[in-house]
Length: 99
Image (cartoon, rainbow, N blue to C red; front, side):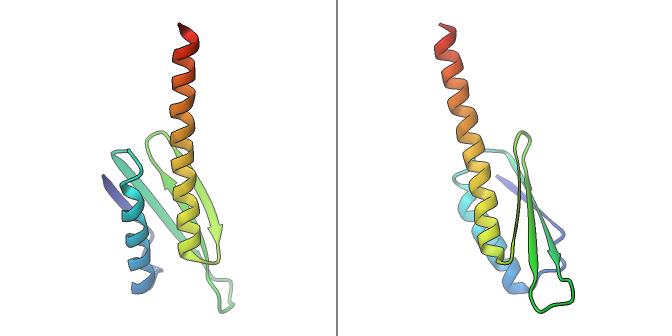
């Protein structure tokens, strides 16, 4: 699977490593050809950063905001996985009812 990262220039080296590590762990669970991860960092003058994660595939989309990069990324990738599973179950039920 190909993973494209967008807007990672605002991240530190540690944050980039976290992003790549977590996304590569989940890439085995997600059965898509391409995954686009868009990371936006919002810092409104305080000491903390707020992360906005947008994940897109051909058919699925997830949007999560959190103060913790790892938690936000886990949540977004879990949303994608649950969308994929939901669509698979829906297709199976549709085929069974069609008979």
